[in-house]
Length: 556
Image (cartoon, rainbow, N blue to C red):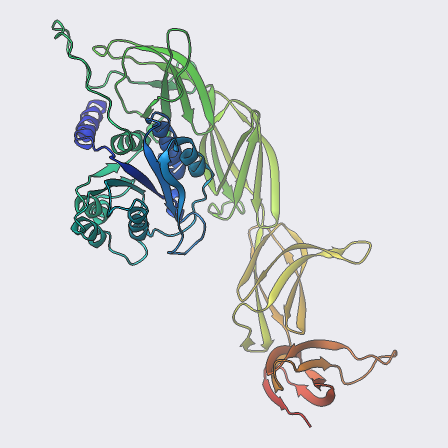
């Protein structure tokens, strides 16, 4: 299987990088900063890979190269106008471009066609040679045609070229943007991982080095291997290698070490999972990461005619975690976990985890609804720690009704759960809240009160939650709806009880402004007081449970 992977990888790489395409004159990098860049490739966010690739390539660029940065989708969600020239094209802008990319948010849509058009205009493509390098992980989402733009720019008769780097695109998606490059005489390059993205940027951004001086043809030697490096990873000393579903998440970064011991962090070759790759003979720092485990090892790679198998031992184990609401129940997708440990170890997730973790004792916090549990987790090297945890909750679903047979629909009513027991000051602890019909809560076993409020009407329903049980509650509001029509936008209406208390005050049940206001009231008698610019009127009315009353009040 590894031999087949080597052959496939070699054919792919040869097809991708066979024909270098180099930026000429002034250039602008158009960077996709849309929300889709949070998607992952082999466990890493695409935006992180793009930032590192830009930094790596720009750091080796000729400082005299005139280059700038335009971005889209980095400031607003859902906007097709979110396009900005972040760094104008000029010499010596490499550091500014890298800094801007590192600080950039990734939020919005993909108006790539308009971004390229503006980049072309910024470069004054009607006057001099110019190049745009578009880096995108998605296709146009703003109803524009990149193919038509390419044809338009080419038809202008000027020396303008657009290259497109498709990062993580499918073959079909790539075809949708490749025409932008092809119609301007540029190239479309597909990059599916970090290494390929670096090579694509080198091909389109960095000016080619001068041809080396011819050297005498060497004496015949043994043919080099297609791939001469095969990293070996163990969780514990002596192995074995982890199973494929775990090993596929590993990545090995090789940094050359010079004769004086200096590690070159600007140049790295990354090998993923069980794959192989080629490296020149020499000494390297091999940095290995697998989930939460990390190791740095100095290794020596032999001649390219021999297979080198540098080995790393991560001193780690596997946490196999499953979270259930109650014993025997299916894992709950709403149950969350948080793992913390030494050396800033931190990770979070939901429902399940099959995670490589350094050996030692770590703190695990699990939450589901209002329930929370904490425990320590001890991980041993090379072993799987199975944790099938029961959070211990009951599931409560609450509906409300105006009266028997007439349910409250929609999302206007407020539902809050309190502990039944009151504190010394008479208050209750809130366990959570939400809005609307079908409100549901996960609660530890115990006694509670559900309080449902809609307008001036409310109802309290006591209940007892039991682990593993579902309870369906109905909160009867015994209320009706009153729709008032009165005055204009400056007219004030307030609803009171018809009788006064011992202090001569009437209880207020809510207020609103004209010309219309609607609210829900418990069944009973009320008075509507309206202030018509200093002229006040009082109109009595009666609310019946489950009925709607439409009341028009006019200025006397």
